[in-house]
Image (cartoon, rainbow, N blue to C red):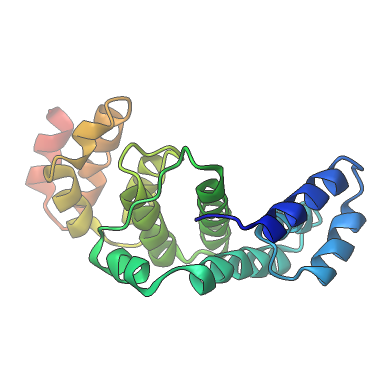
Length: 193
């Protein structure tokens, strides 16, 4: 993603409002700029602190919708194929990651584990170096979403080899996945291993 000069001016106004430490200024700013991603994410956090989870989720969805509006059809096609990549080092791309992360957490709060798992998979596929630690969301979400067969295939695919810090920790969840598959012998063998 790339910001044009008008959007950069909007970003500068946003940062000056953040420095006032008054969330109502951001709310008024959002009324003037209803699709400004940084403001949507920040007001979403404010709504979450005020225990307004529905509004928080709605604002995250609007931020993600904004990214969908400005993305090219080839990018959307690559997302569907699992070939889309976003460089986390670009600040413009980080807003997508942040909006996706907060949306995923809202989905978990709602108990929609399957959708949250799909978002975790998407964010992990965007950058296999996993800057937001999506790998730590995938294993509990896979069990809660009853996607144990997918999780077993995922662990066998070698995708965990890229994440050396969580490799053994995540593999422990294979025991639960095999129990969901009614494979008690395999679960015992995995537990022993």
